[in-house]
Structures are given as structure tokens and as C-alpha cells.
Length: 374
Image (cartoon, rainbow, N blue to C red; front, side, top):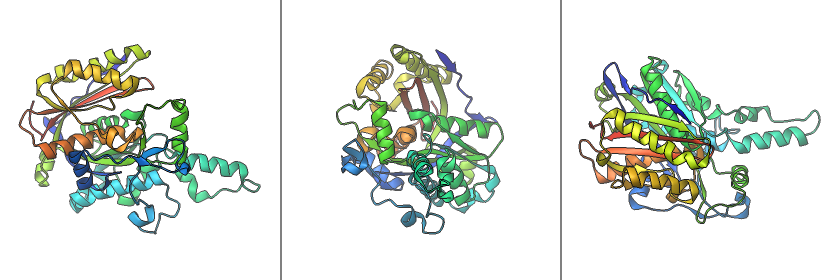
């Protein structure tokens, strides 16, 4: 079992905070729709027709099309996951105002994805095999086949000129994107980071997921889609810009496990390391956003949390919007912030985001809600 040490989530003695966020999800476009959906426990998973793939139920962003959300210019060949990403980042930047991009070379973008767009990769490959010789393909669609398309296009679209990074880590991608953002700021590579992750719902992705589980999905399991973006910056910069800290980043931990039976111990090690290294008490954790609590991996995750933070309330975005795969970690973080907005927080309240990725990794992120101390 391999451990990855936690970072010191401070910059020059100051704290790093999350000061703004946005989401595009089956709840709708924008933060307000996501907050209302989480607060109301409104499930968005619905029946799908056969053209959507083998899974008969799913969570899809309502009435979402690139041309309608972003305009017709530059969107003719844009695939769905890229459009979701560009829109999600755009909503965040619009909320923060022009000050955020005034020094665009000091603003970084770290964006999470699975393997890019499964639909684009598979469609382009098919065209290269079935097109008229010499295997005609649409060159405008080639950029959609690379995994950094969403991050690169989002930066170009919104003139973000700082470091641009693509993260791919399965269901833990959103949490890993946060960690990478922390490192970019700590290392002096940028002043602020927009980070997040996105995923699309397409027949191609549905078939890949079906094959991954051999068609043995748990009852009620469904695919979802969406994206969530967050602004990470030093607390002093947030205050200067008039943004109130929503949460302070205390620490993150990730580990790998070689056998399924060791996943529990690996996750417990991450959570305990978060608490121990920050001097936090388990009793101060008010809310936990687990990746899931159904099926084999969900049961293991639930057992760990029941033992270590039994009194914390649970918020479960997957049960409401479906399995968003690479965007799951970002949706968990958004759900925690939405929960805090609805319930209110006190100084010292903590939040925990956890997950067991079926490919052999686990992770946890510890936050102080409202930017308060632990």
C-alpha cells in the first residue's frame, strides 16, 4: 500500500480558501440550482430511451446544448464534455467579475476529466475506419479526441493564460484537482486557481461503464453528468476582492490499495492522517460527502465513516444526480458547500470528502467550513 503525504495548505503563512464556485448539473445551470437541489433532496435521475445506452435511467443536464449555452461561434465541432466545462468555468468567472482575469497570466486552470470525451474518441476512430479512402475524417473534430481538450478550450475561451493542467484520477479526480491547485499556488506558479471537473452522459460512455461492471449495476444505480468549478486563493486575496471564504482547505490524503480487502484500511488511514496532522477532532466534522454508500465499495466506505465520524451528517450527490464518474469528487465538494449554505456553520465546523475508487485508490479532503479554524 502506497501513501502520498499530505500538503501544507498554506501560502506564506496565509491560508488557502475556496471563495467562489459554480455548477452545471442535472439540477440545472448555475450554483443556485445546485444549492436548491441539494437542500431539497430533489432527485434528478429519470428514465431514458434506448438510444442513451444500456442503462435505462440517468441524470442529464436539462436542455443543454453548446450553441444555446455558449453561442454558435466556435461551438460547431465542440463536444458535450467540453461545452459543459466551458460553461461551468464561465459561470464562475462571471460571478467573480472582471477583476479575477485582470492578470490572466497569474490565474491557473486545473481541470479534471476521465479520458476526455468517450463519444469523440470513438466517433473519430470509427470515421477513420469507415470513411472514404484515404480515410476521410473531419479535422475540426480531432482536438476533441485528446484528454486535455476541455481544460485547453476553457482556458482559451475565457482567456486564462496561467498554468493549464488536466487531471485524470477516476472518481477522485475532483479532489486531486484541488490538491494540484494547492501545489500550483504554493509553488508560486500562480496567484489563484480555478479548478474542477466535468463529465458527459453519452451512449458511448454508458456502454463503457456497462462493460466495466459486466452489466451488474446495483439497483438504482445510474449515470449522471455535469461539472463544478471552484476558485482557490489565499485568504488575504479573497478579502481584498470582497469575497467571503466559503471553506478553508486543511489537508488532503490519497493512498493506493492492491486488494479490495485493504480498501477500508487505506481510506481509514487517509481520514486519520487528515485529522491528526491538522489537530482536528473527529467530533468537529459536521458533514461528510462520501463517494457512495451502495454496493461493495460503498459499504466499505460507509463502514469506515461510521467508525471514525459517526455523528457527522451525510450528503450524497450521487443518489440525486447519478454517478458522474470523473466529476464525482467535484460534485461532492459542491454538495458540501451547498449543504453549508443551507444549514449554516459555526467556527470550528469541519467537512470531509471521501472516496474509494474501484481501480485501487482512496482519498479524503478535510475542510474548515466558512473559512473558520479547527
